[in-house]
Every structure is written in structure tokens, then in C-alpha cells.
Figure 1 (cartoon, helix red, strand yellow):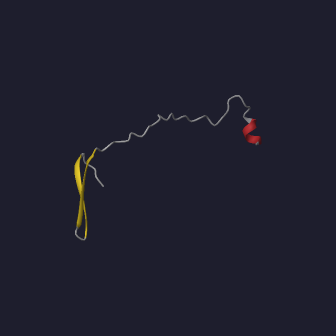
Figure 2 (cartoon, one colour):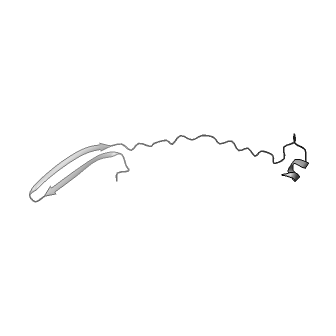
Figure 3 (cartoon, helix red, strand yellow):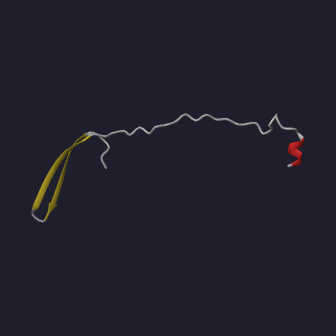
Amino acid sequence: MWKLDGKYTITSTYLDNSVESTFDFVATVEEIPTTELIETITSFVDESKDPQYYVDR
């Protein structure tokens, strides 16, 4: 509803009754924690295995 800092007044009226309420609003920015992603691509071929291993499977 409110996005700007400041003093706001709300007036509620019902029939002949009226009520005013004043409040101070301070917008807070919630910082979302981020983690640094590290991209790694593992090699498809395992050099420790015999090439025939990939043919036989």
C-alpha cells in the first residue's frame, strides 16, 4: 500500500462517527542473501578407465 516514507493519516467514518489515526511509515528494503555459484563441467571421459569401458556398457 504505502511505498514512500512519511507520516500518514487514516480517517474511518461510519454514520456520524469519525476516527482519525496517524502513523509514520518507513520503507525497509529486505536484502535477499545471495550465494556465488561456481560452474563446473566435469569431463565425460574418465581418463583412468580403458576406452573399451565406454563401448561395453
